[in-house]
Length: 299
Image (cartoon, rainbow, N blue to C red; front, side):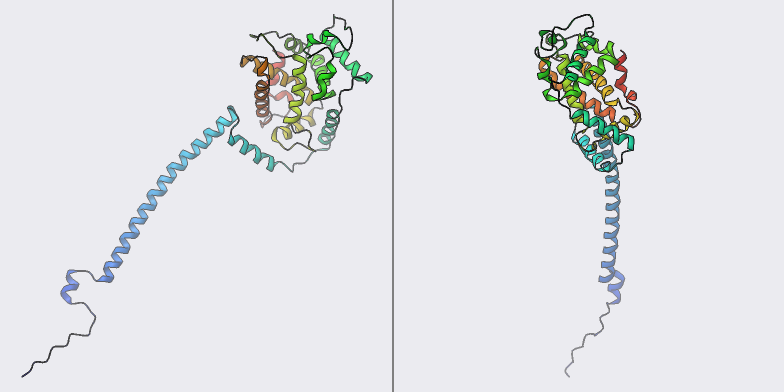
Protein backbone atom coordinates (compact mmCIF):
# COMPACT_ATOMS: atom_id res chain seq x y z
CA UNK A 1 0.00 0.00 0.00
CA UNK A 2 1.31 3.34 -1.01
CA UNK A 3 1.91 5.74 1.76
CA UNK A 4 0.52 9.21 1.15
CA UNK A 5 2.94 12.01 2.02
CA UNK A 6 2.02 13.83 5.11
CA UNK A 7 0.91 17.37 4.36
CA UNK A 8 2.75 19.92 6.51
CA UNK A 9 0.59 21.95 8.81
CA UNK A 10 -0.72 25.14 7.31
CA UNK A 11 -0.47 27.02 10.56
CA UNK A 12 2.17 29.77 10.60
CA UNK A 13 2.72 29.43 14.30
CA UNK A 14 6.23 28.51 15.40
CA UNK A 15 6.97 25.04 16.92
CA UNK A 16 6.82 24.88 20.69
CA UNK A 17 10.47 23.89 21.05
CA UNK A 18 11.52 26.91 18.87
CA UNK A 19 9.44 29.25 21.01
CA UNK A 20 11.00 27.97 24.18
CA UNK A 21 14.54 28.15 22.88
CA UNK A 22 14.63 31.37 20.76
CA UNK A 23 12.50 34.47 20.79
CA UNK A 24 10.31 35.03 17.81
CA UNK A 25 11.45 37.30 14.97
CA UNK A 26 8.97 39.94 16.12
CA UNK A 27 10.23 39.77 19.68
CA UNK A 28 13.80 39.94 18.41
CA UNK A 29 13.04 43.06 16.41
CA UNK A 30 11.27 44.70 19.36
CA UNK A 31 14.22 43.88 21.58
CA UNK A 32 16.57 45.33 18.97
CA UNK A 33 14.48 48.52 18.79
CA UNK A 34 14.53 48.85 22.58
CA UNK A 35 18.29 48.42 22.67
CA UNK A 36 18.75 51.01 19.93
CA UNK A 37 16.48 53.47 21.71
CA UNK A 38 18.42 53.02 24.95
CA UNK A 39 21.69 53.52 23.05
CA UNK A 40 20.54 56.71 21.36
CA UNK A 41 19.10 58.08 24.60
CA UNK A 42 22.49 57.60 26.27
CA UNK A 43 24.23 59.05 23.23
CA UNK A 44 21.96 62.11 23.28
CA UNK A 45 22.51 62.58 27.02
CA UNK A 46 26.28 62.39 26.54
CA UNK A 47 26.12 64.93 23.69
CA UNK A 48 24.01 67.28 25.78
CA UNK A 49 26.54 67.06 28.60
CA UNK A 50 29.36 67.66 26.14
CA UNK A 51 27.54 70.66 24.60
CA UNK A 52 26.84 72.05 28.06
CA UNK A 53 30.54 71.87 28.85
CA UNK A 54 31.53 73.36 25.49
CA UNK A 55 28.93 76.12 25.67
CA UNK A 56 30.20 77.11 29.11
CA UNK A 57 33.69 77.25 27.67
CA UNK A 58 32.48 79.31 24.71
CA UNK A 59 30.69 81.76 26.99
CA UNK A 60 33.89 82.10 28.98
CA UNK A 61 35.85 82.77 25.79
CA UNK A 62 33.22 85.27 24.62
CA UNK A 63 33.44 87.15 27.91
CA UNK A 64 37.21 87.22 27.61
CA UNK A 65 36.94 88.59 24.07
CA UNK A 66 34.57 91.28 25.27
CA UNK A 67 36.93 92.17 28.09
CA UNK A 68 39.81 92.42 25.65
CA UNK A 69 37.74 94.62 23.36
CA UNK A 70 37.03 97.00 26.23
CA UNK A 71 40.60 97.29 27.52
CA UNK A 72 42.74 96.42 24.49
CA UNK A 73 42.93 97.38 20.87
CA UNK A 74 39.85 97.62 18.68
CA UNK A 75 38.63 94.18 17.61
CA UNK A 76 35.85 92.61 15.60
CA UNK A 77 33.70 92.12 18.68
CA UNK A 78 34.04 95.79 19.59
CA UNK A 79 32.89 96.73 16.12
CA UNK A 80 29.99 94.28 16.43
CA UNK A 81 28.74 95.89 19.63
CA UNK A 82 29.28 99.34 18.14
CA UNK A 83 27.06 98.51 15.16
CA UNK A 84 24.46 96.96 17.45
CA UNK A 85 24.37 100.06 19.64
CA UNK A 86 24.13 102.26 16.57
CA UNK A 87 21.07 100.40 15.27
CA UNK A 88 19.43 100.26 18.67
CA UNK A 89 19.92 103.99 19.38
CA UNK A 90 19.32 105.35 15.89
CA UNK A 91 15.81 106.57 16.71
CA UNK A 92 16.42 108.25 20.07
CA UNK A 93 14.71 111.56 20.70
CA UNK A 94 16.38 114.84 21.61
CA UNK A 95 15.01 117.15 24.25
CA UNK A 96 14.34 120.71 23.16
CA UNK A 97 17.44 122.05 24.91
CA UNK A 98 19.63 119.26 23.48
CA UNK A 99 18.37 120.00 20.00
CA UNK A 100 18.97 123.74 20.35
CA UNK A 101 22.47 123.35 21.75
CA UNK A 102 23.44 120.75 19.17
CA UNK A 103 22.24 123.07 16.41
CA UNK A 104 24.28 125.98 17.79
CA UNK A 105 27.36 123.75 18.02
CA UNK A 106 26.89 122.63 14.42
CA UNK A 107 26.59 126.25 13.33
CA UNK A 108 29.93 126.96 15.03
CA UNK A 109 31.48 124.03 13.18
CA UNK A 110 30.43 125.42 9.82
CA UNK A 111 32.25 128.74 10.24
CA UNK A 112 35.58 128.73 8.36
CA UNK A 113 38.47 130.78 9.65
CA UNK A 114 38.71 134.03 7.68
CA UNK A 115 41.85 136.06 8.24
CA UNK A 116 40.11 139.08 6.70
CA UNK A 117 37.36 139.17 9.36
CA UNK A 118 38.13 141.60 12.21
CA UNK A 119 36.53 139.34 14.85
CA UNK A 120 38.69 136.41 13.72
CA UNK A 121 41.81 138.58 13.80
CA UNK A 122 40.87 139.74 17.28
CA UNK A 123 40.36 136.16 18.47
CA UNK A 124 43.78 135.18 17.16
CA UNK A 125 45.42 138.13 18.90
CA UNK A 126 43.58 137.26 22.11
CA UNK A 127 44.99 133.74 21.96
CA UNK A 128 48.50 135.14 21.78
CA UNK A 129 48.04 137.61 24.63
CA UNK A 130 46.51 134.95 26.88
CA UNK A 131 49.32 132.51 26.14
CA UNK A 132 52.14 135.10 26.34
CA UNK A 133 50.78 137.99 28.43
CA UNK A 134 54.21 139.61 28.81
CA UNK A 135 55.27 139.35 25.16
CA UNK A 136 54.08 141.84 22.55
CA UNK A 137 52.89 140.40 19.25
CA UNK A 138 54.56 141.98 16.24
CA UNK A 139 51.77 141.13 13.81
CA UNK A 140 49.29 138.57 12.56
CA UNK A 141 52.06 137.29 10.32
CA UNK A 142 55.19 136.78 12.37
CA UNK A 143 57.72 134.08 13.21
CA UNK A 144 56.60 134.50 16.81
CA UNK A 145 53.64 132.22 16.12
CA UNK A 146 56.01 129.25 15.79
CA UNK A 147 56.65 129.55 19.54
CA UNK A 148 53.04 128.45 20.11
CA UNK A 149 53.36 125.54 17.74
CA UNK A 150 52.03 126.88 14.46
CA UNK A 151 53.69 125.53 11.33
CA UNK A 152 54.69 128.90 9.91
CA UNK A 153 54.51 132.65 10.47
CA UNK A 154 50.87 132.83 9.33
CA UNK A 155 48.52 130.75 11.58
CA UNK A 156 45.58 131.23 9.22
CA UNK A 157 47.02 128.62 6.85
CA UNK A 158 46.71 125.94 9.56
CA UNK A 159 42.96 126.38 10.01
CA UNK A 160 42.06 124.88 6.65
CA UNK A 161 41.59 121.43 8.17
CA UNK A 162 38.95 122.51 10.66
CA UNK A 163 37.73 126.10 11.00
CA UNK A 164 37.09 128.88 13.46
CA UNK A 165 35.82 126.48 16.13
CA UNK A 166 39.35 125.13 16.62
CA UNK A 167 40.54 128.62 17.49
CA UNK A 168 37.59 128.99 19.87
CA UNK A 169 38.60 125.71 21.50
CA UNK A 170 42.16 126.93 22.05
CA UNK A 171 40.90 130.23 23.45
CA UNK A 172 38.57 128.42 25.84
CA UNK A 173 41.43 126.19 26.96
CA UNK A 174 43.82 129.04 27.78
CA UNK A 175 41.13 131.12 29.51
CA UNK A 176 39.52 128.33 31.54
CA UNK A 177 42.50 126.09 32.36
CA UNK A 178 45.54 128.37 31.92
CA UNK A 179 47.87 126.22 34.04
CA UNK A 180 47.10 123.11 32.02
CA UNK A 181 47.33 125.03 28.74
CA UNK A 182 50.76 126.47 29.50
CA UNK A 183 52.09 123.18 30.84
CA UNK A 184 51.22 121.46 27.55
CA UNK A 185 52.29 124.35 25.35
CA UNK A 186 55.73 124.57 26.98
CA UNK A 187 56.01 120.74 27.20
CA UNK A 188 56.65 120.66 30.94
CA UNK A 189 56.62 117.37 32.74
CA UNK A 190 57.58 113.89 31.63
CA UNK A 191 60.42 112.64 29.48
CA UNK A 192 60.05 114.49 26.19
CA UNK A 193 61.15 113.56 22.70
CA UNK A 194 63.77 115.48 20.77
CA UNK A 195 61.10 116.35 18.19
CA UNK A 196 57.86 117.23 19.97
CA UNK A 197 54.40 117.69 18.47
CA UNK A 198 53.52 121.31 17.52
CA UNK A 199 51.09 122.46 20.20
CA UNK A 200 48.70 124.72 18.25
CA UNK A 201 48.49 122.43 15.22
CA UNK A 202 47.82 119.51 17.56
CA UNK A 203 44.87 121.49 18.95
CA UNK A 204 43.36 121.87 15.48
CA UNK A 205 43.74 118.14 14.90
CA UNK A 206 42.01 117.38 18.20
CA UNK A 207 39.05 119.62 17.31
CA UNK A 208 38.69 117.81 13.99
CA UNK A 209 39.02 114.40 15.64
CA UNK A 210 36.25 115.19 18.15
CA UNK A 211 33.86 116.33 15.43
CA UNK A 212 34.41 113.11 13.51
CA UNK A 213 34.34 110.85 16.57
CA UNK A 214 31.05 112.29 17.86
CA UNK A 215 29.42 112.22 14.40
CA UNK A 216 28.50 115.88 14.74
CA UNK A 217 28.07 116.44 11.01
CA UNK A 218 24.94 114.25 11.09
CA UNK A 219 21.54 115.68 11.92
CA UNK A 220 22.04 113.96 15.26
CA UNK A 221 24.84 111.59 16.30
CA UNK A 222 24.30 107.88 15.64
CA UNK A 223 27.26 106.40 17.53
CA UNK A 224 27.09 105.67 21.26
CA UNK A 225 29.79 108.20 22.29
CA UNK A 226 28.02 110.88 20.22
CA UNK A 227 24.62 110.05 21.67
CA UNK A 228 25.98 110.24 25.20
CA UNK A 229 27.76 113.49 24.36
CA UNK A 230 24.50 115.12 23.29
CA UNK A 231 23.11 114.27 26.71
CA UNK A 232 26.12 115.95 28.31
CA UNK A 233 25.56 118.93 26.02
CA UNK A 234 22.04 119.18 27.39
CA UNK A 235 23.54 119.58 30.86
CA UNK A 236 26.30 122.02 29.85
CA UNK A 237 26.48 124.03 26.64
CA UNK A 238 30.26 124.28 27.03
CA UNK A 239 30.60 120.48 26.98
CA UNK A 240 32.38 120.42 23.60
CA UNK A 241 34.96 123.01 24.65
CA UNK A 242 35.61 121.21 27.95
CA UNK A 243 35.89 117.91 26.09
CA UNK A 244 38.51 119.51 23.85
CA UNK A 245 40.60 120.41 26.90
CA UNK A 246 40.21 116.90 28.33
CA UNK A 247 41.16 115.34 24.99
CA UNK A 248 44.27 117.54 24.75
CA UNK A 249 45.41 116.35 28.18
CA UNK A 250 44.67 112.74 27.22
CA UNK A 251 46.65 113.10 24.02
CA UNK A 252 49.69 114.49 25.85
CA UNK A 253 49.48 111.67 28.43
CA UNK A 254 49.36 109.12 25.58
CA UNK A 255 52.33 110.84 23.95
CA UNK A 256 54.44 110.42 27.07
CA UNK A 257 53.23 106.86 27.75
CA UNK A 258 54.12 105.79 24.20
CA UNK A 259 57.48 107.61 24.25
CA UNK A 260 56.33 109.08 20.95
CA UNK A 261 58.28 111.09 18.41
CA UNK A 262 57.04 113.66 15.91
CA UNK A 263 56.17 111.04 13.29
CA UNK A 264 54.06 109.08 15.80
CA UNK A 265 51.48 111.84 16.26
CA UNK A 266 48.72 110.18 14.21
CA UNK A 267 49.10 106.93 16.14
CA UNK A 268 48.93 108.83 19.44
CA UNK A 269 45.80 110.62 18.24
CA UNK A 270 44.16 107.29 17.34
CA UNK A 271 44.95 105.92 20.80
CA UNK A 272 43.48 109.06 22.35
CA UNK A 273 40.31 108.72 20.35
CA UNK A 274 39.87 105.08 21.37
CA UNK A 275 40.27 105.87 25.06
CA UNK A 276 37.90 108.83 24.81
CA UNK A 277 35.27 106.68 23.06
CA UNK A 278 35.46 104.21 25.93
CA UNK A 279 34.99 106.90 28.56
CA UNK A 280 32.06 108.45 26.71
CA UNK A 281 30.42 105.01 26.51
CA UNK A 282 30.35 104.52 30.29
CA UNK A 283 26.86 104.39 31.79
CA UNK A 284 27.56 106.57 34.85
CA UNK A 285 28.68 109.67 32.91
CA UNK A 286 26.07 112.37 33.52
CA UNK A 287 28.29 115.45 33.25
CA UNK A 288 31.45 116.15 31.31
CA UNK A 289 33.21 116.39 34.68
CA UNK A 290 32.34 112.73 35.35
CA UNK A 291 34.82 111.56 32.70
CA UNK A 292 37.74 109.79 34.42
CA UNK A 293 40.23 111.80 32.32
CA UNK A 294 38.75 115.13 33.44
CA UNK A 295 41.05 115.08 36.48
CA UNK A 296 44.05 115.41 34.15
CA UNK A 297 43.22 119.10 33.86
CA UNK A 298 44.18 119.60 37.52
CA UNK A 299 47.44 117.69 37.72
